[in-house]
Length: 234
Length: 234
Image (cartoon, rainbow over all chains, first blue to last red):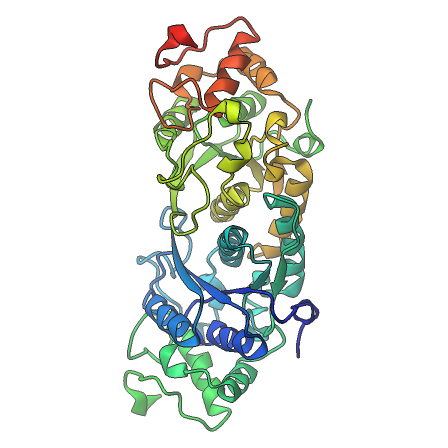
């Protein structure tokens, strides 16, 4: 379940991991750490997300994994609009609405990789890691490998000096259930990850993101270590 | 001198112009206005540039041209570092240093187009305009057409829904001198554009950007309508 791009990660090269503070990117970070003892840098993006609490967890996870550097880059997307994740006037759809597509922030992953690539260039890093998973690919076209292959070429052409950038997506074939299995194996501290789109701690337990997370733990007969509002009713 | 991508701009389609407030993007905006009476939207990026005064001019230019919307999007690149344009502790090289490359902000144009593409998606626009010119291509690899061709494919793959985005670069074959000639023809109000990398008004007249601007006007035996410090000594 390792994608072709990840095969090309030469253990020993410094890595940069895009870390949201959610389960997938935390698992990706622990995956990188398990595969290499080279320096690992992390980048988190504060894009005005409703669930900005995830940024605190990203910082804690970076410290815990022994990251060489952790950067938080701020982008104000409020003037762009269009997504309930960045616009407090729009409602986050519940899981039952089957409208995850309404939470799309246009070109979010392109933006994240672009900002990470800027850091990579300054730090002389050529291996970027991002953690799209299989379950995201229906709603989010920028979670597909063909998108990252194209972006990888674009980065090579747009870099200040001729250089190859490799975008690794080690979890791209994983379902959420696979992510949890792999993460438990790697010892990811899931109590320090955040998922709820509503940004609540305890988590709401009903938004699309919470529902997926709960189902992934339930599939392993495991209790999710984070707290939920009204857990007894979930 | 119209690039192949611009040939594909169907007059009548709404356009989005990346507008820095400098001479090139102002000329591009007037070029679009001259070619089409369709709605024109503008996007400016506040990336902590030393010469942020250009953003005020971008707003004025947008009003003057009758833009349907003007957005200013803020990105804080201070934690990325590496360029004197965003780091007040680094010095802007003088023109004579022949080190324009030191002013590179990594993946700046990729970042700008990505943010503009987010706006384009929200506004249902498919034609993006950016104004790299021929003189920039030696120092800035992300001013080359092959970079924009690749990025255009990446945008198509990463868009929320399957859609073609066209990135137009109408000035890509123009020298700075050509830009001024075309702009004077189109009636661009160059007194409302900003160029000085030091961010000074009156402009410093000695930084690389000022030097190029002065030379472009001089080549047409024209006086640059903006003020310079110590003009008599330039």
